[in-house]
Amino acid sequence: MLTSLDIENKRFAKQIMNGYSVEEVDDFLDEVGVEFAKKTKELTEAFKEIEELKASVEHYKNIEETLQNTLIMAQSTAEEVKNVAKQKADQIIEEAKASSKKEVASLDSQVLMKRKELEDLQKQFDIYKAKMESLLISQLELIKEINKNEDAI
Image (cartoon, rainbow, N blue to C red):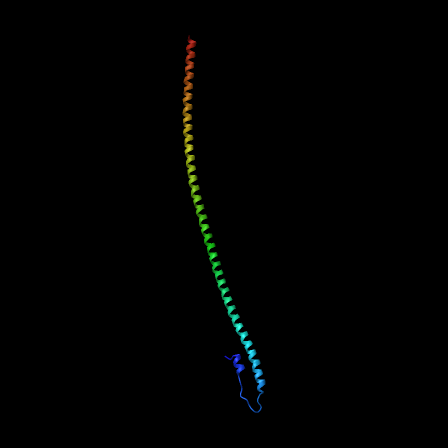
């Protein structure tokens, strides 16, 4: 690669006739060397900036990839939480249904027992009522008997 020093140090063979002015050629070479040095420096800075920009782009690509992975993970986690919540809700509903069925069966059983108790009490009342009626009839008969005996005296 040609450097600015190569340009500055370049010397041409001198010709006696129709040659260039050595001073003008040297001045021009100095000017070209300075411009070449500036352009080389600019090019080096541009390459450096390109490398920095590439590094920045790579950094942002990594951040983007991380964010995408995080978003995917968050969506996956949200879906998983949603599914777990639905499963728990379904389980709670099933448990509530089972519990309510047991409770209904228990209450039905209690109702049957209370009806049987009521029937037993009604039978006992009917028996008591019949006994009382029989007792009252026998007492009435006894009073009639006493009244007959008193009338006969």
